[in-house]
Length: 196
Image (tube, rainbow, N blue to C red; front, side, top):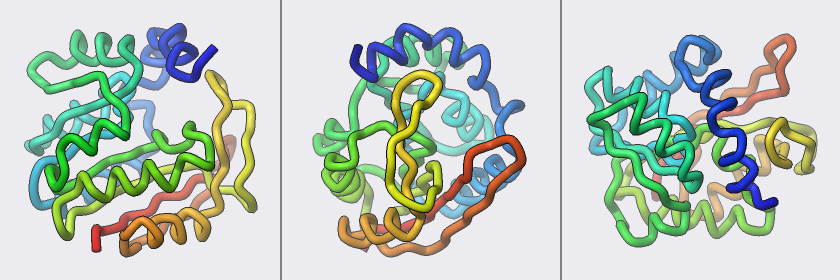
């Protein structure tokens, strides 16, 4: 079963458990809200899942859309948050709208592509941003890049320095790095980067 099919089969379950801001880690909420306030221009929630972050930022007054490759997630997001633009699409579809976005939120959406595809994905994100646009990336931190058995489909740990290097190679400048390990959770990292 493909990753998209695996998430599609469990989209409702995923949305019921993780599809609201109230169950998100408070430091993540603070980081994402603060990042969005600094973005100049429209925001795309790339890999929006059931759309909770998209809706939250829209409620705070940001111009934002959500995109996800899982049709079932987009259906759930549209029903739960009418009036917000949600679209089925992949990272490579971003190439169709170069320089379109002031900000790209990729919150745990880059844990799923195979490692050999990540440079191409980061290049697509870079092209989609306006000059000096900002990317906020959240991911599982680890001592080395390696797969692990995630709840729905295999995912990847990425050492934060390695992810930073890949971003630099794709044309980004790292502005900020956060690493933390909350009790009962996998190690977390977040990087804010701007398009060079």
